[in-house]
Length: 391
Ligand code: GLA
Image 1 (tube, protein in one colour):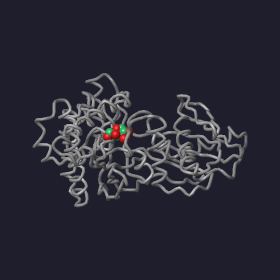
Image 2 (spheres, rainbow, N blue to C red):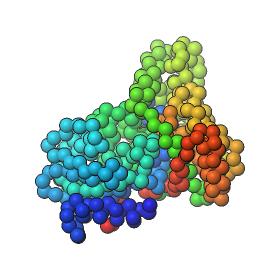
Image 3 (cartoon, protein in one colour):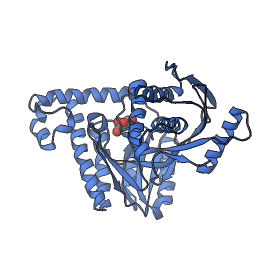
Image 4 (cartoon, protein in one colour):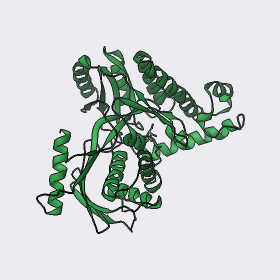
């Protein structure tokens, strides 16, 4: 589906909801999903991440109303839900994400208006490409447009993050909302996940490449296993503090310090700490190599990240490893790794344009042969973060 046709479907649905043929005041926006080039499971350890936007969007078309009611039709769920801007009680539906955004907007002193809207996700829902973060960021952007709120992109990202982390109680880091709100065309976002969240956009020289995403469609309960890993990392911090009292999180320990004291940390905590500490170092190295245009080393770092997520952090699975092992032996692949939380979901590869078709064809058929399941494939560029769309 092209962006124009997604937008037209949302607009048509909105007119249907409003029972009108024409609605001159409609506003619209798109917010992209993401992959994380590198920095797996470092964000909630106050570490470094290096995500990019992908050309798959959450699209919302809306008109303001004066009733302080937010009403949204989801084309994906074929469901219309609503809530009042003075009642933020959760009901377990997808609308809770929007309630969380409205709740934190009010907490920050904004007075959002009600609106009626239709939304559509090109980002596979629950596939590890941040459809929920894109929805939160897009809803925040619609509140900004319909209520004329002076909300900059960073504030929008923080509000969307609080909606997911505090309101929904999902132990994610800040990465997903930041990249969807602050991403820029052909750039990656180097983000320090310790407040004040310093960030820098770094050009990604991928003119002759595509980002090829393979979706295994294996679902996982992210909340459960991220909480377990988070806990293991916190226990690692406590143990390291016996030797290094200055450290507040794993991000403060260097690889050399870890090597010096690792024998005092029992397994599996030691493996978890080793992954996070070395992954932070890999992110810093990737940023430097990207700035130098050295894609070959970037690719090696991506594969090293995947290996560490597999053996030390233990969040991969045989399907994801199968894809990576295949990418490693193909011509025309710079590198790749699992993206999102892991245990299923997606893997991406950075692939030279002329090899994309052959790689996709062979990998899909070999995967089907090995697992009896099909892969979904998305061939993406790096677009801008959230932005207004013309109807
Ligand atoms: C999930 C979370 C992110 C991040 C990744 C792992 O996608 O939403 O914040 O922690 O897992 O890198």
